[in-house]
Image (cartoon, rainbow, N blue to C red; front, side, top):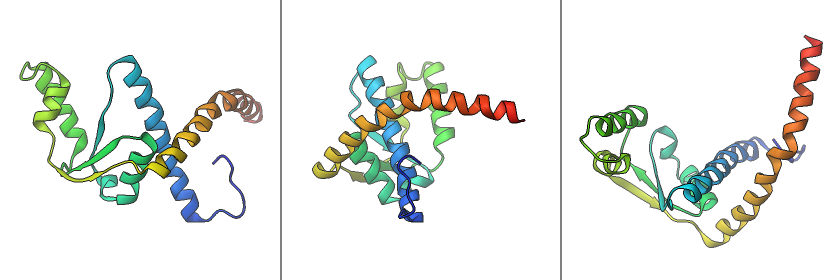
Length: 147
């Protein structure tokens, strides 16, 4: 937890965990979009998708629309989509996804003020790992010496 202090509460830690995951998702999605094609929205499924807070954080942090789907078992569905593509039922994974995904039950849109704040935080977040990589390596070397 970067920036952790004694004034942070359990709720702060939980939210920081959600925001860290959302920022990582935003960073990787931006890289994929630059290498392939734009990503207009996320379809969110599974247990975490039941949380309005989580869905809104993902939307704000990514600057993208998030659609909560009625799909329950995401892992099996993803495997089925890949199999349908591999079996020739669909030409692309995107086609299989469009045909096989559940229906949206709620849509979350990025809020201007929050999206701007998350964009600023994402720039800080992107600088964090390169700065921590050397520190992590030194910590691992230290731990190996002690074991």
